[in-house]
Length: 575
Image 1 (cartoon, rainbow, N blue to C red):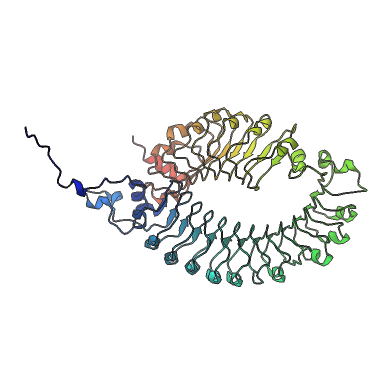
Image 2: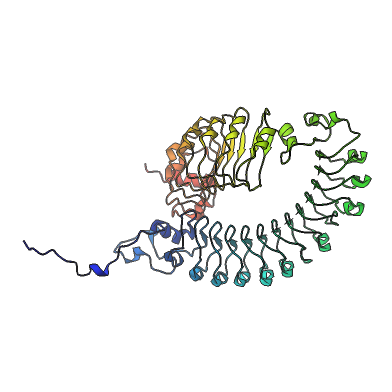
């Protein structure tokens, strides 16, 4: 035997082949479906093979293989939907231009501080989601996207917007909340298709005169001291939010279709009769936390009004004309120094015996009326990291049925939730930062509905199977990589929503045993194949599979609806 070891003369030129950050199977399927979901994969950059998906010849073309009709690699479609949300992207390459067929680009919840100018080359783009990043500037090139319908930019650090924004002639939704905007370009008035505009939580002191076409306008939490007269020309405006500003007068708003007007937390002292007269279609008027001293007799002009919130004002005497409002169903008066009204008529427990529901002063930040009358405990949209004890204290001893702690910054399920285990049937913890679901939730044996959407969950506690009354579970926009095993054990479930996760497989045999399951949403996941046995789940009335990278069944079959889809799957079961 030779004493010399065999030496690989090329070893120095070889490098270890790195593990792919995106499974090749997903890329292969994306060429067929035109959709690629890479949300929540911890990506710090977009792999080059994603940008070049429709340019480079795939691996199978270099292999000496014969392909059936369903495996012809050359029969690929342009990528139209790319989901990159909830990663750690700090930069987007100029190579995004190599995907000119994109209609949806989702980059929300990343670390982007800038955008490439080549975004402007995506001429087919209709949805661009950029919320929860670190953008300080919106590139002018974005304003050249003539087909853009929806642009979401909330939770960035934008201080200004380009004048060219008015060029987005087909835009119907623009969300700019939670930025640092002090002014807006007048060109916003050129957005003639715009229906929804969210400007809340900025630093605006005035609005442009040119806004005329909107159906919903949210200007809450700004520095507004007035609104432009042009708002009265908004013939389509139905909802207007002006909470938490510096308004001293009720805006003059003869907007013929305005149904909901929110003016809470301002400095309004007087309700002018001529301004009330313009609210011809109003059904909800919120005036809580102002400085109103009395209501004019002409409040009767609001004949369509069904809810009037005057909580925490300075009203000492209530005009009898309020009783003449024909459609008024709820009148909220807690926190006012009322005189001349018998207290027993104002007590929350007696609200169901009177034509309108009236409440007395309650603890700060806690709606005692909802707790006592509706059995609802709500502390939502506060961006809070925990639920204050005073919230739970206010509900002590009450048979709370509904709990809503959504849209906060909760990282754990509030432990005091178990205080209502004998009564609570609905819990909403959506839009928080939960990375795990506490076993305490399994103690809520009366639970019929739980909403955990838009969190960071990847698993559920095994004790959940004890919730024998549970009918509905919402888990969309989390990080589940498989269908949660414990859900298979809950026979009572009727609705499971698991869209926009990373679910790669389901067990049709276990699903079949869920005899009450009628709605199953698995859209925008990582399903590479759909087992034909899923067709045996005959209780399903709505099965959503769109946005997954499977090749069969083809999109045309999926589009026919649930019954046709299940029938097709049954026909594919091997005999």
